Image 1 (cartoon, helix red, strand yellow):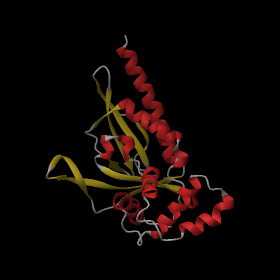
Image 2 (cartoon, one colour):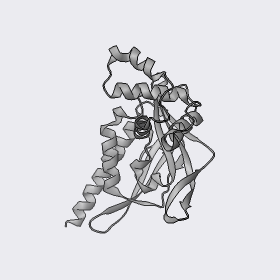
Image 3 (cartoon, one colour):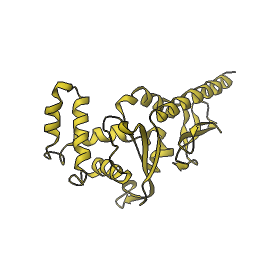
Image 4 (cartoon, one colour):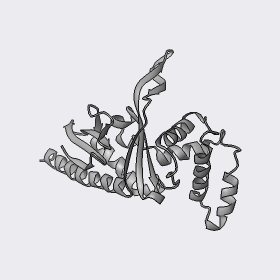
Length: 233
C-alpha cells in the first residue's frame, strides 16, 4: 500500500479501492507517532481528498503557525481549541491561548508591526471572548485538519495541527470519537459526540507535515491519472 512519510513520525497511508466510472474511491488513514488516526475501513472519493490536501498545502502558511504553542501541553491545546470552537466555554482557564490567538487573528487581518503594541494591549483584555464568534471560527479554520480526510478522519477524530516555531517542531494533537449521541426527535442527526479521555500527540520536525502532504499529493495524483488513463482505453 502506498504511504507518504513515516508511521513512527507522521504518515498518510492510502489504497485505491474501486471506481464506478465517474468517481474513484480509496481507503485513507493518517499515522502519528506510530498510532493510526481515523478508520481504514471507510472509503473516500479519491480525487476530492487529494484536492482538499492540495488546497491546504497552497495555504499552509496561514495554518498552524500564527500562534506559538511551545509552552502549552497537549491537553491544554486540545481543550482550548476544541472547547472554545464548540461551546465558547473555558475562557478563563485557557485565556492565554485565546489572547495569543486574537493577536494572531488581528495581525492576519492586516495589522502590521507598527500596530503590534496596540494589538497586544487590545487582545490582553478579557472582554468579548464569550461573544467572539469570529475568533472561534478563525481558531477552527486555522488548527482543525480532520476535514482533509473527509469521512475517514472527520467521523472518527477531532484532530488539530500546531507549530512550535521556537522549538522547531510541529504537533498533531487529537482525541478519538467513540460515540455519537443522536437527538431523539431527529434520529438522523446528532447533536453531541463522546470523545476518548486520552489526548494523543505526535511530534515531528518543522516542515515534516508539509513535506509528507506534498508527497501524498504527488504519488496519489499520478495514480489517479493512471486509473483515468486505463478507463479511457
